Length: 413
Length: 86
Image 1 (cartoon, rainbow over the protein chains, first blue to last red):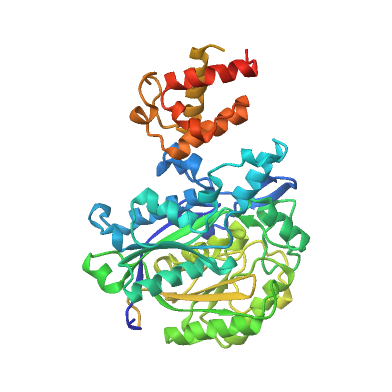
Image 2 (image 1 turned 120 degrees about the vertical axis):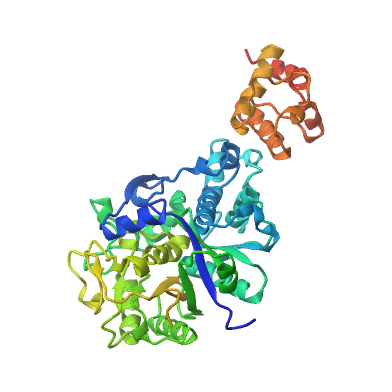
């Protein structure tokens, strides 16, 4: 592996609760438009959630939709849209040199819950358990569905990394490109978690499920009265290439992967550890050859839990001292927590800042929690910035997994 | 239930499990696999739907009997009769 091998982003496809393309998503982030609905959750009544409304039949036949999974469908939509965005001539791409690397928080809960419900209608007789259950629940399902839909014969797998998964998918792809395992990668993160009551029930019984009379205000990181996570579905998949390959084909280069780090708290299953988070950010900066002052946007992970937001702010306060040109925002305030897709979507929402010069805010802050008062926090209104050339994207998850990914504008030193 | 009714039952199941297929010209005597895009998982779906919707069991050794609409009707007719369906 050559550490000098540079990796660039040349295509983005996404579906978020408030947008089915990057321009739509970006437009709503700059306009301060959240989109959270109330949905019926099996056994649990109505709860706020982020629901995507992309046209699944755009890229899939109805039979594929019937036999596949929701997250497979999200993945196919995002990968196909990313391909379109990349300008690649798909017919001339060697499919055996293409990899698919998708981050997931969890997989299989939806289908297993559905089947248990199904056989409950038949006295729990397992002869009514569908033969589709195994192909739907194998952990590689979302990535595998992409390969089948697109005829990709290179490697595919998912990266299970709790809610750090979106970054982890991109990091895995960058590493595989550097190793020469593939020439082209579809990578990012995906989630179907709103379709499993178990995720809602788990967070509720942990005291970490967000609620508000106005669903669009339920996700409110850094607000003093925040009360937990709004669970959402979604996906963001990027086309990644080695810089020289992208240049050779005359690709539009959206951004360059500059550095990353994944580390572990090794302390608690659910409580974050700001020391390890700060270490993670520092190591990502070191690997990118950058100082904290070189980061112009910190895209925070904060999920609107009481402690988690404060812990991340503690970590950021330690690293980003004396950084007047660093802005801090949060995208979950618009779309909730897209779980495995969160990191990938939140990065995508910030990437257009390199071109448009704006930083989208964190919204739904009626009263800022003093413990979350960070210099540079962009509150409720987008701001224009004189210089936007590097983004640090935080994504953290249960079992103490931390990830920080740094992406910079292509062409800057 | 007549044999024609049974063919319609099977066609209705196929319409659910293979929604992209045009079933308007399916020939009763021709193997379903030779005229429709059906794989082994789809035939398992037919077996499952017969079980769920009609209480009909098709043992694995008899799956071959589901090859065409005609063979389905012949094979399933006594089973539907035994169930006392209309």
